[in-house]
Length: 114
Image (cartoon, rainbow, N blue to C red; front, side, top):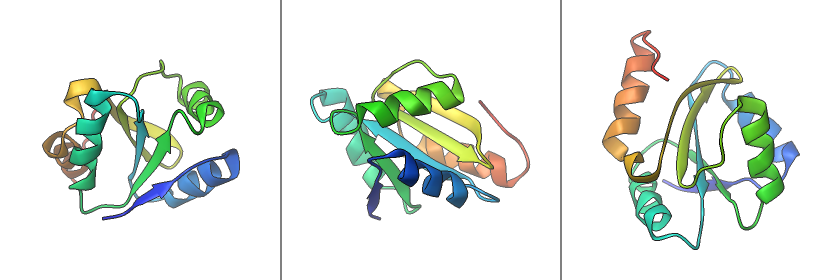
């Protein structure tokens, strides 16, 4: 699996377009945090495409995501978005492959957790 880096609002709009009809995973990462480094390794194990924002490189974009989805700033933070709607999020030590896969499975069966 490869990460797709987001650096600006136009790329965020591309990500949101990709979420139309299907859940899309967004990962907010800090390259200066040990917890985020562990979460990065977890996210790299996913077979689904993961869109990533490194907050040190794109703080304005991270702030825009917080504004659009009414979130507090946290890193690491994993979000699942579908049709421009935040369906699920977790942060810090809870960013785990099994949690994300479970959330995605719940969504495919019609259930939504947030």
